[in-house]
Amino acid sequence: MQWCKYLKVILVLLCATIFTLTIYKVPLGHFKVLVNNSVVERLFHEEPCACMERCLAASDDKWFAEHFRKDVPPVLSLNNSVLPDHIFNWWQSLQSTKSKANYSQVIKELFSVIPEEEWYRDAGPSRCRTCAVVGNSGNLLGSHYGPVIDQHDFVFRMNKATVQGYEKDVGSRTTHRVMYPESATHLDNNTHLVLLPFKTIDIQWITSALTDGSIKRTRFKVIDKLQANKDKVMVMHPAFMHYVHNTWLHIKSQRSYPSTGFLVLIYALHICDEVNVFGFGANDKGTWHHYFEKTPKSLKRTGRHSGGIELQTLLELHERRLIHLYTGW
Ligand code: C5P
Image (cartoon, rainbow, N blue to C red; front, side, top):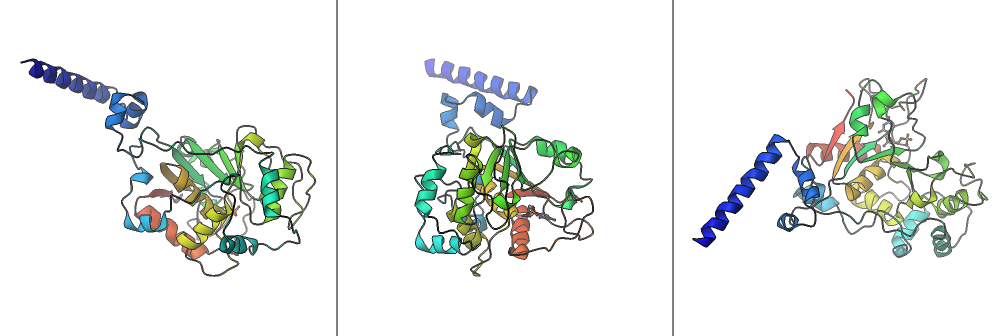
């Protein structure tokens, strides 16, 4: 019978494909990328991402679903920049300054300098984006995590974290550096700068630092002319910062806000398919310091941040296998 013949051919083809994949140890994720846009891809269409280990968007964890709000945009754009009053007021209260700049004017000026791009709209069944979120903890020293960190598609680093001289433990690639004006460092041409704006003048600063360098102080003296590729600059959305504060940390206190590391962690959950976390927390002796300090002084653990809740949430994410936390010891 004709249909029987077809069935046999299909079965033979299927067996040959499985055999080839097994022999050449081709990960399923890569296979899906190869057959992107084909009939087979349509068969896989229900898959939310192509990762083998973890696929954040596929998680059916109830606790995660209660916290994760896909609709909150992580990056500011000209189209999504309007803030509801309660978020604007919260954001304005974080760090007081004398600047009375008009927010919408500041946004207009920002997007006359940085691209008006809609970043990270590429999630889907053929994408497996792995991300390493690298905090600045001294627990990285002696960890030998460098090669593991460098294998990720995106490597996020924060503030003034030095790489040179620490490559064995922290890796050498940086795709994104997250910073605010007072913690800024110069970047090479290939690195994305992700600005954390804690006040309106922080947004004015990035516009100025990439052009005429007219702003020299925010709360403190800051770098006035920054070396960075302006086409790779993005600004974390104030509404996203508010969501992290409210929904992930459930903080009621007005003037506290999440730490850089915690903001980057949740940012990564939103734009990556698999997230691994390095350099967070104390070292094996309980000391809370930076890996790049020659004479480490113990840092105050929380400051204006809710360190305890952040650490608890980080551990919860790890225990629920939503991220993997590398503790260094
Ligand atoms: O100190 P700094 O803010 O530059 O560090 C970046 C981030 O690294 C922090 O916000 C925190 O999340 C993480 N960190 C940590 N433990 C340390 C030092 C930093 O978890 N000992």
